[in-house]
Amino acid sequence: MDMRLEVVVIPVADVDRARGFYETLGWRLDADFVAEDGLRVVQLTPPGSACAVIFGDGVSAAPPGSVEGLHLVVTDIEAARKELEGNGVQVSEVFHNAGGVFHHAGTARRVPGPDPERRSYNSFVSFSDPDGNGWILQEITERLPGR
Image (tube, rainbow, N blue to C red; front, side, top):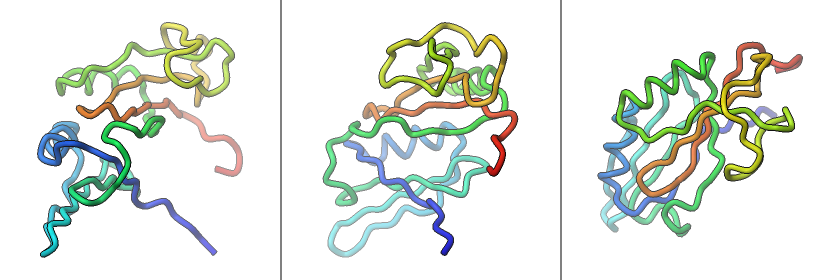
């Protein structure tokens, strides 16, 4: 049976501020509705993604800003960083991991600059939304076999 990840719930403190932030990134607004009981659901989708994020009032019991390690895949890490910065996002410098595999939590073992060999899966940029939910951009130019 196919199982597709289509929605990730992120906890936010201010729904309108979060909506504005993600719209500034160029994400498509899919829904913003309020139910009779006050439940508010906002859904936005990053360009080119089949998976959306949802946040709102009454959507998550998790503390705002408690989600880390959300990954967005890009084909050009430096161009993606420039675009984020141009949209007013505080974004890290491009980095790779000292061990050469994925990246460690937080900022541990970050080495400035893209992967020296420009291998797929090994160059990153990080940023957070206004609540502190953490995002990672990962450069993938060639997929591993079977992907």
